[in-house]
Length: 308
Length: 180
Image (cartoon, rainbow over all chains, first blue to last red; front, side, top):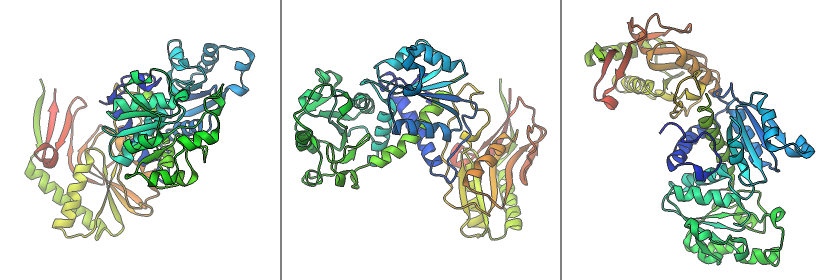
């Protein structure tokens, strides 16, 4: 396969396993490119990309912007905090105004689930979802799988446990879809209050005991407690959460195998993982960040090549 | 119906490879400051052949060979129907101040070599860059690019295609002219 089956990347749910493989193969080449003395290629010099961030982001926005610039695309940035959204403009109006300025592609983060899907039905530009509420964050899931593939050789057949706040996490949902499409086994681990009801229907198993989950796993993806999304108390205290679900070096050393530790960032050091775990060789957190740029370059390149 | 005609037989390809390799030695002697860069994908086969001839037959030790992929530097992105698929770039040496020899199988419009010249800038500033090509399609250049070393010059109309086959990949060393 040499091109994507979709014109937008709205979620992992909407793409095929072959798309994931193509993105990974393309990312391999971009990873080599971003390790050259001059990290830039001229492929997208006639493409303009708008980064629309209706919700705060540091690393995702930075990573997308770097990916775009390394492909030589022209980039315009927009963040809701300084815009007419505050004056009551609708999403479609905002985006259409930006597209009137001849923008070819939109990278969007939005607090409402489904914002990307909604927009794709109303505008002509190619859309990349950079996170929509608690729904999906496809490029994060792709870079997570890519990092697993890089460390362990392949994703198929691996046991991956996602630990933490599953309920509010778009990273969790996209990861479940991505890992399953590549043939990995997925387990969810966290306090019952932070695990969505009926999540087993997605084909994942649920475990509330962290030690048991880690004994089963090859990879543990530690999610952040999203304090900004916790409208009510889901657990008695952060200290109690850490005692039950925080990964420490002692806990990892007591297992009879080496579990690869991942984290989508930003880390709350001492909450979901301790500093010595985050900085250890078992953790591939910084590899994830590096791979993020290569994966986003691959996604943008492959989608841009379908713009006629 | 497509017709195919043999432009170069296996024996002719072999003679030409020896001549091209000898010409390289005449100019670059011991290759101490010279590196070979095969242009991906099809130039890689020719480049590997020349490297092994240099080392095994002409006993020039330690010839450095890199492979350069030009996909992301091409000027026809989004102009065709298909997504341009990339190949690996493997250049694990420094090109700064080196004599670089680009190696490709067929020189046609010159656009690939133009892209390769741009791509090379990402790796440093070579002392000079030369071009070696097995087949030079005369009168079909879009850009002012000419080979320094050429195997065979051919006059081919645009509708015709020159296909170079290599034993290690296609089972035979032969150059075909394919016409509709």
